[in-house]
Length: 157
Length: 185
Image (cartoon, rainbow over all chains, first blue to last red; front, side):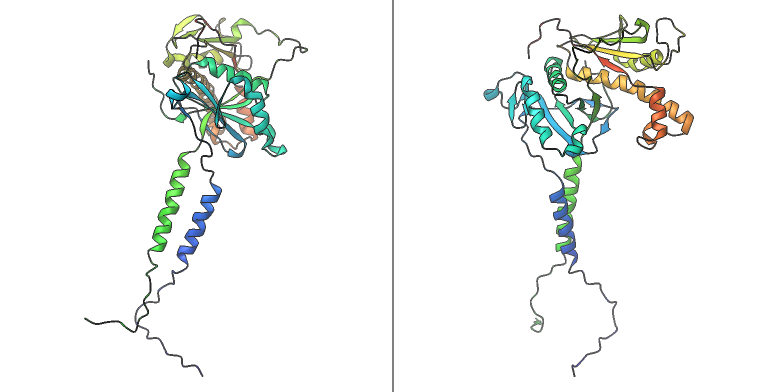
């Protein structure tokens, strides 16, 4: 017969928390896996404009980003405003090809929701933005979002 | 000094949970910062040369907003300050034929936005924002009056939201940009 020793009743019984770290680590790994980290390096300086009438993009899966701004390394890429698609600087003419590539990544049932988010610096000129918009029309990617921060709009000049 | 030789040496894992929580909170905070917000726009489809040109719209139903390369506004051929744009646009939309220069009804009203290639992107977004705001405020007013809620608080894509959107259809059309100074960049 095993010898059971009766525990003395003094002091409250404490809950075993030894498995708490495991639970929290599980949560941590879940979040690390689920959240999408920035997968591309943005090579242009961007401070997006501020607006009040913003909508939040709910389905991030269908959103593709393009960046317009002045290069962060002007000694290599010059000081002109450039368009960045994926990891390279491209001309607005190459947008239709790029859109086709990006659309292929989506499941077919989501492709009507394909959205392009334009992250552009507030100080660039509209010329390149118009070219990009024309390219997107050409590629039939008609849902676009001008990426902005939410905040009070101040007149600047 | 009393030695506790009877106890097995054990690493205290009590703070492990704290460390893991700290990491968890760090990830939660850093990832939520990058939530993407913006002004959604729907571009017009590519023009089909076989299709007949769209019907012409009466001049009174078109609200012409121009932004030049100095980011100045010209609204219906009058200079205007950015801060007045929302109010005047609302006035244009809700005219209901009262003023012969403004729209006949919200359904027919079209805001036409045209920019120069030299317009700065920030100014363009500001104008877009003001125009959107005019529509959103009108929709909110109507939704409040009808359902006691703001437009965005109504069930998304539901009947009520559709009704409000039908009352004030958002018609912002964009023309091809001008290029007054042959802007490079």
